[in-house]
Picture (cartoon, helix red, strand yellow):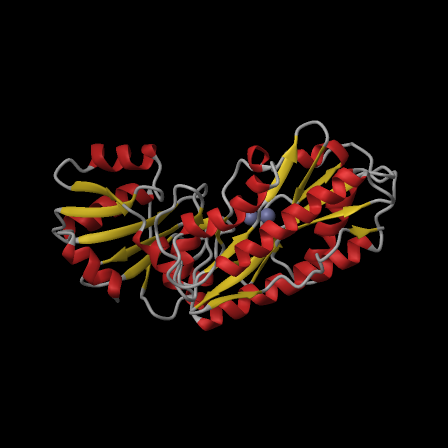
Length: 355
Ligand code: ZN
Ligand code: ZN
């Protein structure tokens, strides 16, 4: 395993992925296939997964490549004993994977061992997807598109944002999604200018936009797509802004390829909005990686100097937000390829969809 080599190169005796109830399970799942909420993955001379009695049966069914150890008593105490018994001196953990509390508990109960916070090397590895992972993401994207089509056949003026979001979430779950990939965003009228709006009691109204930013988790993998639709006739200015954001989306898609930096991809789309005097209304980055987590590396943003690589899956999501008026974002999920990108989001966007 490349990770074992990396651990050695960094002068570490072992590397731990620790998942308590509150942490993200993506790295644990990636390494082992285990979805339980207590897991300790030990990467070193010997690799294994530890979990407690609530999950041992589940782990036996999910984990093939590693032996499963049964954690007894307090997991931190159990782990400390394992570390001391193994004669480990320096142990690494991704800084983003452990809380300050976990780290300080381990340090105080085990003063002879050095606990070293590191970069998240597993997350870095996860950025370039295997073909089977891309298939799963594509399946999640396809289900997401179908749900959009389903909900757009049902939304009517007078329904609340919350009602629409809940109906769509229920539909996704019934169709086999494990969960939604994030709290679905349904933003009506002026709420569409808030990029991460939480759906509330506002009712959809004739003559306004509705923004849907939605995604599902299917077989562990996420999707993420945004479309805006109009309920009846909307002002000309809204259509103009839609056209500009669409042009920015297309410029972004044309730029994304193996070898381009996240910064240059972002710039390709950002320039289009800047030329239309909408640059000040596009505050966030152009996109982010998607996989086991809906937001993971790489980033496409003005400060992202890392290069995109073939096999990465990223979003391209320029937006223009006119506070208090309306906002437009068009988000596609794409696979980076050697000479371009493959768009996984199939929901139409070429003109403002009007209900
Ligand atoms: Zn999104
Ligand atoms: Zn996104």
